[in-house]
Length: 401
Image (cartoon, rainbow, N blue to C red):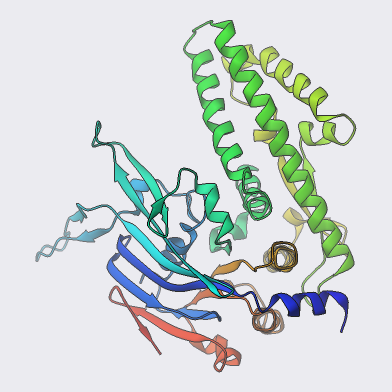
């Protein structure tokens, strides 16, 4: 047994995952409770029955806006009003939505819940709150100490062919697992950038205010760029030394000015450059918002064997490249963090041939990962019939098969 296999086997004793999941007024579910185990979870049902909604609920146990990137108000349950009209109107649940869970990590268990809370001063304002063992936490980044999840969705099939923002978000989620402060930094940078942008657009020429924002943005931006570079280097090294036997080997790169400068210059010098660059680009905001910086960095993926960028690969190859990255992240995280992430795989077997589909299922089983996998066809998962839990979603309810 090689060192990687041995180390992974030793870490198998530290399993992690969702043992109980309860949804209230979440998407199409008025109420739903699932008792799970630390094994693959196969969720099947017709299109539109709410399979993806279950995965989205789990994704809200991590920092951020979940796997859809949805607004809080959009997650609240919407259902048709019962009447005989062909064009029945819809109603939105009056109560706020909530997700609660019991998370296992090794021999420990934690209760994690998240919900929407209305402001006392302004009832139209909502924010997401998180509790761990009934204690409200001040920062969502704390969730990373207890739970980690990586997801693949059908929307990500276009990840390599669209704009750079979804690719940055995908990379940042990989960074979260190793750097708990990264989520807070990216959120703070986004907030500062919007404030800076609106201040300039409004014509308020307060140099002291702008300079203060630019200094904070530069400091946060360089820290974000450094964390991304570190994660890329970690995964590239891991993939190079431990290439997958079925899925294609990838090479990952960052295409961004600040990241490239960090290859050659100390962080403080790059911060000064970034701060001055933001000041110089103030006038550009009046004409466009294409301001260079870490919010324009692109995450590039290459099919190593073919020396081909991912955007030029076939749809099936792109899916396989994403699976390669996810598997490398899961293995690397298990070794470095001591517990594996939960995989949320929405219709993942689409565009995978029979060999790659079975290889993926075998790797999930062999790595002892908890993976929540959705599909319309339960027959595709027969090889896991003795190692997985099977559920069917129908009429806003879920039944174990």
